[in-house]
Image (tube, rainbow, N blue to C red; front, side, top):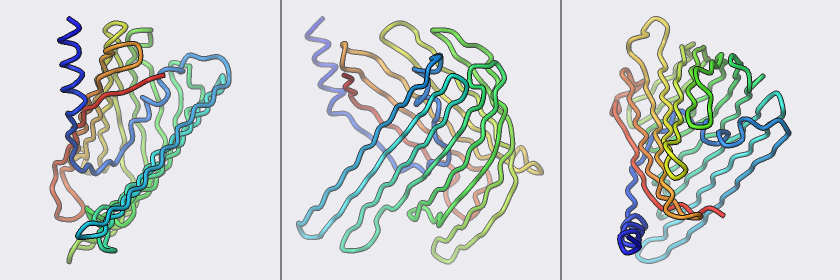
Length: 258
């Protein structure tokens, strides 16, 4: 059994597949799930910076930064998340994308609570010069227990986007419907699954949506080591400029917890 476990660990450790994702929405749920029920004020934070400079035939510079800061009070939750990824080759941007997100959940432990959020985003690779949004959604808890959490939200947001890719240029200012369902299940002490799906659309084109999903599976291999699998699909029925409607990210790896 230990031999099989070691083989599985080795395969997982060297397995990593990831494609570029145009991440419109963040999975806020996984950052606050573990301390949702606390009755005291809790701070959680994580700040990661990466820098790499390579000189072979070309000079390649890579910088990435992932941050989150979470404040849970007995009544409310305040969440800040940021991501930056920059890759330059010979002074030219190969990848340049990032986002900054802030969310407040008022009366977070009630069955019906309220969320307000704001976000700024850019992705030069796909032609998104900048995107901003502000909005609000009621949050309704359908099920809340130690092993299963299900919640839904439906509301509205104001979104502005500037796109430019080759000869294509577009500027939009829209009010949209934003809706989500969140599901988190713990099958046992060692395995859990969580996914959240967002459905966003103009009110006059409600059945021509932008749909974003985020599914995460985690299996503990030992007290401090876990196998993680993530799938994030993205579909836009009516993209602002002529780009692919369908994108996705698949990633797997080994997590170490202390």
